[in-house]
Length: 145
Ligand code: ADP
Image (cartoon, rainbow, N blue to C red; front, side, top):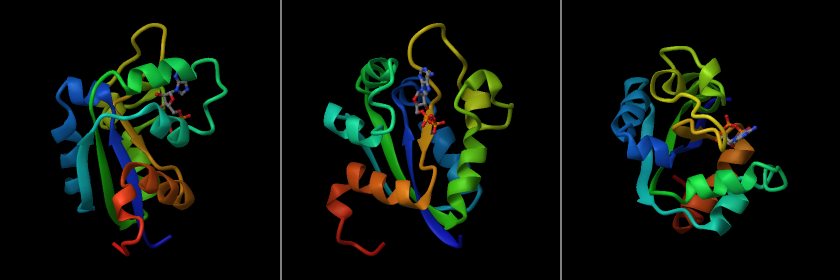
């Protein structure tokens, strides 16, 4: 535990519907430190790496199409036990199950068939965070902070 970094993405639906600021506010309101931030257009290669555990799922092509449908905002945020806490702040994967007060519960809902559009991604473990930071911030590979 202790101080951790998490890789957080504001997904294309979050950017399109005006939730970049909401996500950043929630990170800052909990006094997590934003270490890096950028808007990017994801490539298919980045998404294959990022979702390496999902590439064989029947719904993966939909996720890929959704994630390249518009810009995303990539964030490295740091703080005590941020990984588990931010995942609670984001809420469950399916927005229908997300309570009000969570990011997904406040800003997302299920829109029929296709990929689940749920506004944010956040790393699920320290190992995932390290792996994902390299994918979205390759220029930082040799930096300590
Ligand atoms: P999380 O983003 O909550 O960590 P997962 O890692 O399981 O969830 O899935 C990654 C993303 O893939 C989800 O956020 C969602 O956008 C999409 N997804 C997951 N499961 C499904 C599904 N059964 N059908 C469509 N899209 C899905």
